[in-house]
Length: 249
Image (cartoon, rainbow, N blue to C red; front, side, top):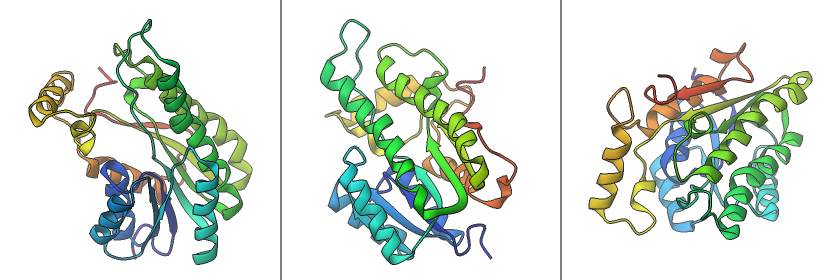
């Protein structure tokens, strides 16, 4: 019997990176998983990679109609949710205070904060009890230059884990945050970076990691399995750092 045997899980942003790795691990320990993503081609590739016990629903968490469509699909196919990993998010373009644009501010908060709030809130009617995981970040705990807007969205995520723990305690729904450090995912090759530029960014990040390397998406996924399963049955409201020591020393 797997740690999530017979459980129904939802992973937003599940078509690549941390979300995809977590969906794979959830399935490997017995769950049926619904994944979301904005790009149909990536979703199809993710379903093929996961291989079984998965349904993909295309959508953008900043659009409430897309969230409704996701949960209508879950309700129709499985009737409930036991585990939710609110993982979908974006990184804002680097901009020190004085150079922040309204468009970048609005987009980052719309996806990372508004999208997460309604991803969780609209899931609640499908929960009896269970586990909700929120993807936060070490940037909520340390001051890195040029990413104040992104950092603020992740600080909000950490706060939600605390307050929703209290809101949902009578329903026996645990809420916890995972805060990754720098993780080696395809995000480094986005934003028009060349491979050389991506490697330079990675090297700069590694220099600030006490363990001397980037983390792996699988390492976040293993932490997510712990928080989703009964192994963490007396754990709620926490922020679990999986960061190679970045926010710790």
